[in-house]
Length: 266
Image 1: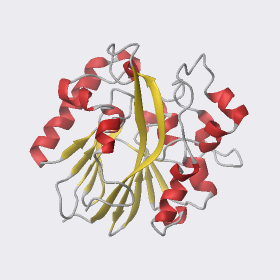
Image 2: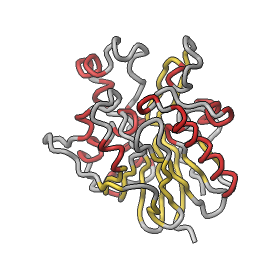
Image 3: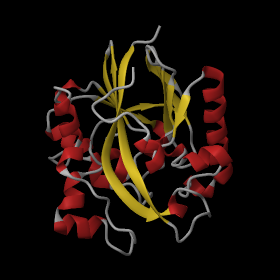
Image 4: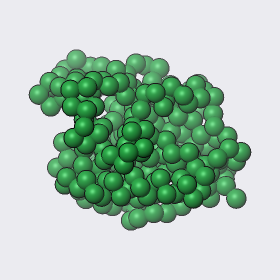
């Protein structure tokens, strides 16, 4: 029986970028708006965050913004992230603090998924940090990983609990291996107490288009398009077999159809 009580999608920022970043070799020259999401899962055994969004300071401090989101590396510029979109603010609206989070599950280490780690630590979060071993080993030369996102305020490396392959976090929450976008990318299957399960694709599928037409995301680990498409098909098969709703991760139209925070899925 599932231990999941509730699930909240959390909007942590909005970004505008060339669609080809989300759809491999398609949509070049088309500017799209994309939500940057994290997900809070409340269970009988504690609270889990899937991803933590961006580093607010890098986006809103002028010197840091210029350093990390310079036009040469980021033609579309930095995302838009206001105070209300910081994860500690979302938690506060639910009567929680960062200390109330027990596990942070990082689907992959890109800056828009792991950038909020330092702020959560600074706000008193002592959660276990879950990550795939392959993600850690192959992230060193990835330009979308900001190394200092993985350090605390004193410059010490954050300590991750490294896993290999799929596993159950708690009954009703399953880590699903979906490599391709990165070497150790992980999605998550969540069995809700009332409604159908939810299958968080993460960046295995940015858009509904990726799912509908088996299109790899624009960014690929070692250019491995076939691996990324296999992961999409795996998610679709799992969704069909379990009756789960498969959620793309950066699709603005899909996001607008979700419950408005702080309303939860149950």
